[in-house]
Image: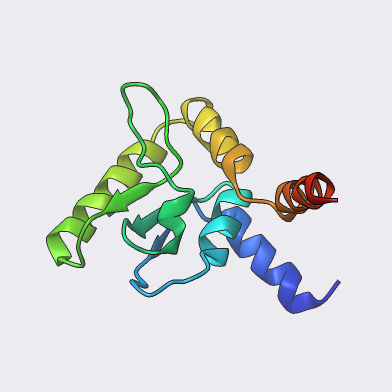
Length: 123
C-alpha cells in the first residue's frame, strides 16, 4: 500500500470530527471518507454532501453529520461546538455515533450494485 494513502487513512481514523468548508464541493468524497473512518463531518448544508448527510439530532440519536447553513463564523463555531459536545463523552456513549457514521458512509459497492440493477432492468 502506498505510504501516503496509509498515512491518510490513519489520520481519518484518528479524527473525532472534520470541518468541511468548501461551498463548491461537487463530489463529497472527503466527507464520505470521514464517515467511512468514523469521523463526524461538519459540513456546509448546501454543498454536494447534503445529498447523503443528515444533521444529527441528539433526541432521536439519528443523523450522520453536523450541518451549518452559512459561512458565518458564529454558525461554524456553533457547529464545531455541537460536534465537540457529541464526541466529548466517554467511548461507550460515542460508539453508537461512530458505528452509525461508518454504516451510513457512501460506498462504491452500493453504487455499483445499483448501477448493475439498472442495467439489468434495461436489458
